[in-house]
Amino acid sequence: MSDLLGRLRERGWRLTAQRRVVAEVLDGDHVHLTADEVHARAAERLPEISRATVYNTLRELVHRGEVLEVSTDGRAKRYDPNARHPHHHLLCARCGSIRDVHPTGDPLSDLPASQSFGFTVLEVEVTYRGICPDCAA
Amino acid sequence: MSDLLGRLRERGWRLTAQRRVVAEVLDGDHVHLTADEVHARAAERLPEISRATVYNTLRELVHRGEVLEVSTDGRAKRYDPNARHPHHHLLCARCGSIRDVHPTGDPLSDLPASQSFGFTVLEVEVTYRGICPDCAA
DNA sequence: CCTTGCCTTAGATCCTGTCCAATGTAGGGT
DNA sequence: ACCCTACATTGGACAGGATCTAAGGCAAGG
Image 1: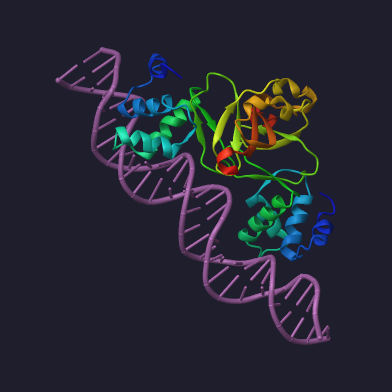
Image 2: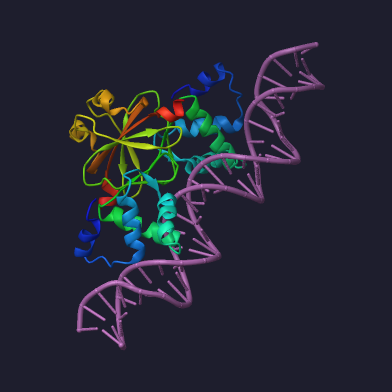
């Protein structure tokens, strides 16, 4: 994620104050924030920034493969700045918090061709679900 | 899923016309319907049935382990009547349709203890994403 | 420094899903 | 066979997340 801005500018991304702030927020603590959390942190530095812009920017970043969107069972989606290194997620079923994990094995090769049903398979996502230490207490 | 009603009655589930219809819809084609699709099909047989009841009933069935709830990236959740046999899902990134798949390998054992971060890990879900034949055409 | 086309904005709107208070009813008890 | 009562159902309001819209703003190439 570092030098995200440089990479984007090279690809003709128009650089605005709002986009810079959103990128900086994501580049900060590598936690998995919801869109509204990103908005809140961005608004600390740029109070006028609108929710719509944050949503737009996040959508852009996801499309460009710079950020990963993680759905958490009907809760707000979370955004993972660590899109450049493949990994999976461990999700707390109670509070929705997320950790990155790196399981062994390759689930993509675990899907026999006979099971593809004509789909063009693009990716696998492995989600471990459990209770985090905070919620267990 | 067959004889769902029998199993539920044994466990003291009050049997109403509405619940019977919802169970019948799920027991019909083994596709993965959204709550509103279940409601639409149920309403063909029992026109007065309300959305709230369908949601309530689905929630109950999920709690009792008779039906699996599958989140599809921010779209409406889908309900999988095939909860009794463990399996994973292949999801069309375009239209949201789902197929059941049975990959080889055991992803639960692929998570080293060092990666648990103190979580009590309860389950794994593997989601293959791709484009279904219909959407590819 | 001007122009143009992309960005941003606030607020309306949409979609899913839940909540509520009022009404209905399954099924055990008699 | 009938009555009770606890549990279900209803529809409409509501809430959260996300998208859309039309108007105005501004980056950056010329």
